[in-house]
Image 1 (cartoon, rainbow, N blue to C red):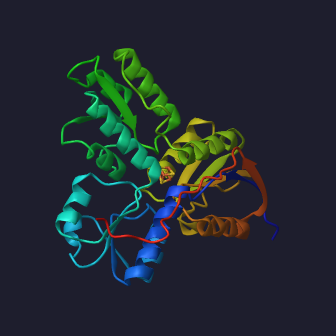
Image 2: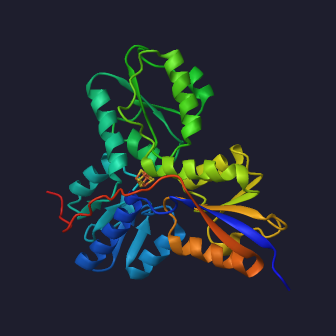
Length: 316
Ligand code: SF4
């Protein structure tokens, strides 16, 4: 039986970012250096495939520091942690390595600097996301106000409207965030923002590639995990930019074949924590049902790399 033709618009850039790559390498280095088990507080990056692979190598994933024994090393995930976490690890004289993405650390430093300058902090982010918890946790509890929507901006109560600053989560929707920032500036004209956008290069580039594909694709598949903020944003960006159907898939087995039956154009991308192996798996699965022609849609070239420490050191 002949297979129906399918033009597959493959987004570039897609998949792993420099922060994810660095965090995974840090866990692997820690296992090499100290042997198994090495504990990791929270999923090192939001991807089950990556986590399972590291588990097989000797990593043990826990949600809280209290679930780690004192005598085994612990790694903090790429999303960042509140200051209280490394402080507690130091108090317990644990070996710990912080795999927080340098672009998240940059936001932490911004928040601390603004607070030192006497400004009250507003964070634009998703409640409960580990990155939001980590960034808000750079300052004492209650000092950072969280806004998630334009409506929240109207409700937020600040100490002094002339003395406030904002930071954002790095993996938000560029367009939604621009609206929230505009609302903040309208309500608090002197609000201080980041020198350079907090939304990171990887989030920005992946959303731009999806925007370029969405108007010409009948459907879009985003390879990523349900708890991956940047992956979920890609699904939304596709829908908002003219793509009739967009679905988050962890891997090929998640594809809803009925939903994409009869289409002839499909977009494919992957969130910043999704490995290329899973993208290839999806392409192979599509090839079993369609006569696939891959067309790369490249909207940016990435050459960002974050240094991985050559030797993991025990904090002093
Ligand atoms: Fe860092 Fe951005 Fe990757 Fe998050 S998505 S780990 S902030 S580069």
